[in-house]
Figure 1 (spheres, rainbow, N blue to C red):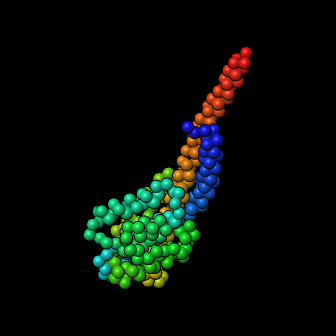
Figure 2 (figure 1 turned 180 degrees about the horizontal axis):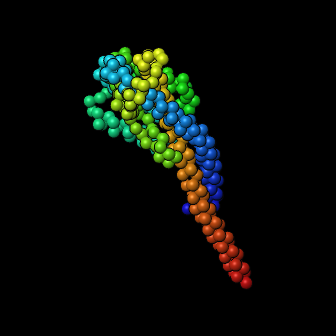
Figure 3 (figure 1 turned 90 degrees about the vertical axis):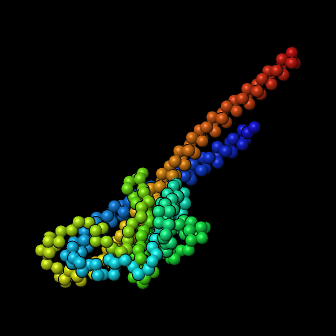
Amino acid sequence: MVGLRELKGRIKSVSNIQQITRAMEMVSTTKLRRFQDRAIGSRPYTEEITALVGHLAAVLGDEVDDRPLFQSGRGNRVALLVVSSDRGLCGAYNSNLFKALENWLRDHPDQEPLYYVYGRKAYQYLNRRGREVEHYFSEPELEKIDYRGAARVARILSEAFLGGECAEVKVLCTAFESMVRFVPRTIDFLPVRPEGLGESDAQAVGDVILEPDAETIFDQLVPKYLETRIYNALIEALTSEYASRRMSMKNATDAAGDMKTSLTGIYNRKRQETITKELLDIVGGAEAVK
């Protein structure tokens, strides 16, 4: 039977855990706001550059199909960039991502992906299952990612595609939809599909004077478009990670509070029982003396 001393120790331990989870929740909330601003701020630029590439593709017409980035690669495998977190304590964020990965592998049994990884948890997950990682992006850390780091990732993936290592490049990451909703998704990265650029009005673009010509602008713009897509995917994944961590730490703090309340009630009842027994012993002893 648990004694008062053990109960008091448990209450103290739960209180310490509650303080830690509350502090982590506050830190996650602060970082979430910063990354959320970056994620939301990057969306208009991503949408505009996508629309511009789509407009120029409409102007060039069939000439776009002759460009290497718009054709299937010479390889026979699929390169898959998996974006996870570097640290744990973020709820079901990583497990949902890995579940989506396993679902994709089950739906494509004939595919043996070339794994490109951003995030320590995905790297450990793949290693434990004996899956070889082609490239692990460890610098900079995902939390410190900037446009330059995203451009490096896009360049490595593009070089693998153009070098004949793979026929397609896909990105498996978590899309940030709201503070309480973040969904793993698979993005088609390469080859670039003109239909994936949205609807374009070639006549409207044709009326605009382009300097230099549309072909030159298009060739210079496509790499920027790919870099922007990678940057937006990484930032949204990072935002989703901290949204999940904030929610997880809040649930842990609330659970610790409930446990503390329950243990305190048990402690008070046992303490009262002990006092009552001591009083009965005193009264019984006094009666015996009489």
